[in-house]
Amino acid sequence: MKTPFFCSFLAASLLLQVPATQAQNVSKQLDALATQYAKAGQFNGTVLVAEHGKVVFAKGYGLANREWNQPNAADTKFRLGSLTKQFTSMLVMQLVEKGQLRLDAPISTYLPDYPKATGDKITLHHLLTHTSGIPNYTAQPGFEAISILPTTPAAFVRTFAGLPLDFEPGTAFRYSNSGYFLLGAIIEKVAGKPYAQVLTENILQPLHMQDTGYDQSDIILPRRASGYDHTPTGVYNTSYIDMAVPYAAGSLYSTVLDLYKWDKALYTKQLLSEAGKALMFKAYKNNYAYAWTNSKAVIGPDTVTLLGHSGHVNGFGTYLLRTPKDHNLVVVLDNEGGPAVQEVSLDLLRVLYHRPTTGPKPVPPAPKPIAVDAATVAPYVGKYQLSPTFFITVKAEGSQLSAQATGQQPFVLVATAPTRFTVQGVPAEVEFVKNASGTVEKLILHQGGQDSPGAKVE
Image 1: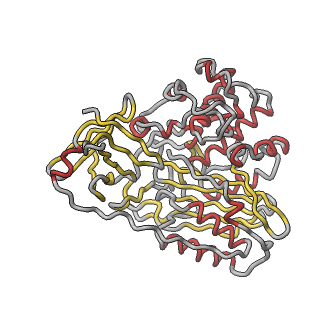
Image 2: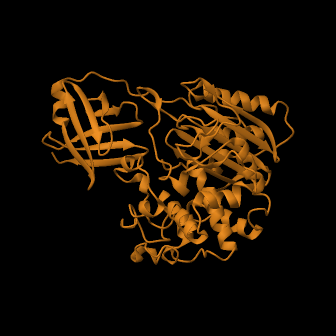
Image 3: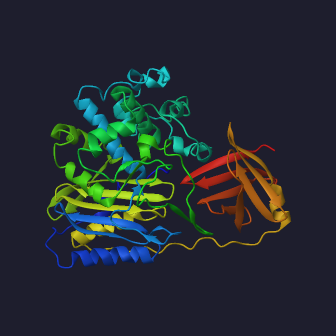
């Protein structure tokens, strides 16, 4: 599961200045724009656009499954990644309104086994707003190795509960999937039921969201999209992840049509009171609310609130953007990594307000493979330690390097520079670093927006 990219800069980037009108050919304009992104290789998935609460456009682009040539459609199910957090925050707020949770209570109130040194000073509000200081477990070295292993909420909490805080709770903002994982564990503890059951009973069933649920790889799920990664060496099936790992931070699947039902319900008191929703949508540090980025855009003489969030999980990218004042909605679900889901969403919204669109931006060409000889790669052979329990072992057969991480199969390394290699079939790169004397002292794993160094130990 990858950390999502936020929309906190929407006010500066959107600049909507003309009120929406009953435009001609809105659907055709939306289709033409989405097609541009699809043809440019920057979008593969399904979009839905609603104007004033009514769906004006919903269509799939590209393939849900490349091996079976199955196209994406409005009823294709996509993994949502961090859009899951919206549902987790709603469940928390529902329990708050029932008097079963308190936002200002420390997490040790509900999880007594959590380390007291930090559990006594981190509140549910801190978890909801990414101000807890708990390190993000998806950014820890070795995450890829543990992400494929079955786990339970209690067991997985122990993998990060003892880590030192990044900062004192409440003093800063740093996105952390760990916080929403903990919220899922707290929901289970208080409700006395599995997270998935609480979600189904309290949100999915009342809203008739039959095409939404907690994803499990072993369950036969009709119309499930397969996830893919674009790499410099081609498009590949994305790496496996056990969905118990993203859990309450990113485990759900849905369709654009079901997310439209979700959007409609947020205008009502069916799930939460008006006071509860106002609290949930209120911006805190970095314009972040309770699983919503709350920003502003100028539309004519008015300043309009924009509520949105993105999601990324192996092979999938998602974005949901609302303008509550006008009841407008854009949902973009992508099953090829979602490199431009935010850009596509903003551009589709511009169409509704008759603003100029940007279209797909040119993508810098991927580094081309180069030839390296055995003498060049020989110094890179060895064992590198990225964490106390996570190593990458590099081997060579002649001029061909391979790398094997703890608990994983070996991967071929393809040179794009004398010291830089792409990992074949994986959206990642390995960089070798030499000291002043020219000896290789470490490697840096570049993956998922994170740079993880590892010292050469053998």
